[in-house]
Length: 113
Image (cartoon, rainbow, N blue to C red; front, side, top):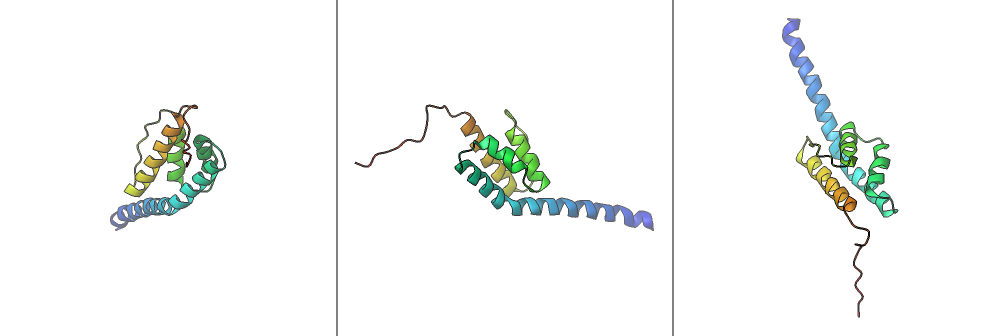
């Protein structure tokens, strides 16, 4: 009887843990993007912003993704819901754009004449 109950019980515990990780990661995305934006607005580079955010108490999957993004030349695959994939891909694109930006290229300032 125990052998019939134990596998489904173990599977339900593993699945519920994964669902909780995903839910917590999705709920933390607004805070994560806000923190990164605030750090970058303060004049810190995007890579340093990722390193500072990694120290914050975010869910483990988000921290793992940020560590992978912060490595140069990283092509780490993001697994999870589309919302997490989208947010991480946007952060990845921003970090690659900033890393490949030349110092002479800056924001164009238009004068209103």
